[in-house]
Image 1 (cartoon, rainbow, N blue to C red):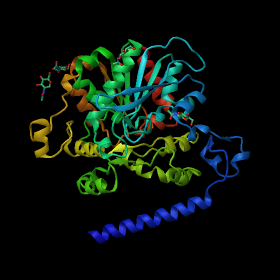
Image 2 (image 1 turned 120 degrees about the vertical axis):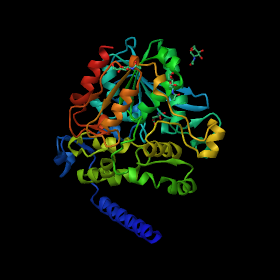
Image 3 (image 1 turned 30 degrees about the vertical axis):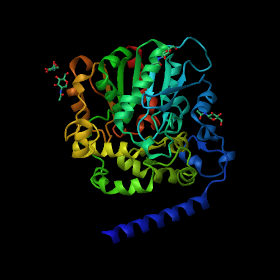
Image 4 (image 1 turned 90 degrees about the vertical axis):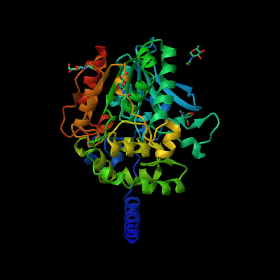
Amino acid sequence: MTSILYNDAKFTVLTSILILIFSIYFLPKYKNNVCTSFSDYYGDRDSNSNCYYNPDAKLNVSEIIRRNGYTEEEHKVITKDGYILTLFRIPNRRGSIKTPGPPVFLQHGAVVNCASFINRGSKSLGFILADEGYDVWLGNFRGTIYSKRHTQLKPTDRRFWHFDTYELGVYDTSANVDYIYNITAQKIIYIGHSLGSTTGYIYGVTSPDVAKEKLKIIISLAPTLYVKNWKSITRHIFSLWSFATPLIAALTNEEIYLRGKPGNPLRETLCTGYPFQMYYCQFFEMVTFGFDYEQNDPETLPITLLQNADAVSHRTLTHCTQLVLKGTLEYFDHGAETNLKVYGSTHPPHYNLSQLKVPTYLIRAPNDLIITKEDVEYVHKNLPNETNPYDIYTVKYESFNHEDFLTARDIVPLLYNHLLEFINKL
Ligand SMILES: *[C@@H]1O[C@H](CO)[C@@H](O)[C@H](O)[C@H]1NC(C)=O
Ligand SMILES: *[C@@H]1O[C@H](CO)[C@@H](O)[C@H](O)[C@H]1NC(C)=O
Ligand SMILES: *[C@@H]1O[C@H](CO)[C@@H](O)[C@H](O)[C@H]1NC(C)=O
Ligand SMILES: *[C@@H]1O[C@H](CO)[C@@H](O)[C@H](O)[C@H]1NC(C)=O
């Protein structure tokens, strides 16, 4: 066993080094970093009129919002347990300063931050909503670069990273929702992607009355609640997770970057430049989320590959593996002995969907290997009838996957147009 592992590790290290050398050697020395088609990436990009330099690749969220012509505000929100979160706000249409419209709160998922909602120019959900007249608020979970502060703890302290989905839903989400509601005095449209939808429900079932008062609806893009039927082959490594845990604890301060840090130069070298690099860098994600190379967007892929990356806590990942292996929606499992101390029972309690008082709208992707049709139907069936006025909406494109909600080339006709039409009627 050890020797197999050792050989595997050796092989992985060797191939990575080879790929790295190869990539550096072939690294294009052009200034233009994006092109309108994949074939334009080959040849002299700087003299090709289909290619141009998109500075968003290297900018932070406030700079991207302003560069794209929108007003930007930055708000600091302190959670009950002391984390200092950044909420970005786009209050107006591009180039306008009218009174803000109805508030929409966008919550990103795991491994990314709110840049994922604004880094695709006119195909970005954040900008599309702003242009439609909504008052757009962008949340950032604790631990991501914009929310990596605490009133007492430093992020180098491993106690900073002692949180999971519960804290993201109960503390971060409620702090953000309270803050937005306080400023706007209007019911908020909550839109969450992936883990960002999970936390909306965790908030909704743990504070049902406040959530009902402050939220108009929870719209979930890939509702990640029950993941019992997780089809991705990554489920096979989850049963090994408990063996990796001590190693992760020893090697890190419980802060994990599955895709590297945002703008990571190594990822830039390995994964952008030529289309073949962009493709191999997505292989593992496609295995996890569903294959859909067809919806790769030549004009924004070099940007999203760099920017859609950020930290998660070890414990959040552990909780996610527990949910997949158990097929339930329950609190973090500390093991029988600690559970008894923390929860008063040897098993962790379940999140009870019957408690939810906020209406919901579930949107799923046909080729999402982690959030399957069965699991979304299970959620839909278990929501109380009065919060469940709509049928599940399935994106009408067979290979649309978990990631496509953010990055698909044709995202506007495939999903955002429908989403706008839906929320305009609310
Ligand atoms: C973004 O970058 C600018 C320029 O470096 C800096 O002044 C600003 O504080 C940054 N904003 C955030 C939210 O990191
Ligand atoms: C709401 O706003 C008021 C006045 O600006 C402030 O005093 C109060 O602390 C705010 N509450 C929350 C929960 O942010
Ligand atoms: C879930 O909530 C409903 C409605 O309040 C309640 O009737 C039910 O007993 C709860 N289920 C569990 C397992 O706590
Ligand atoms: C919800 O509606 C379904 C179908 O209309 C019905 O079968 C079910 O009994 C209802 N559930 C509750 C709790 O009212």
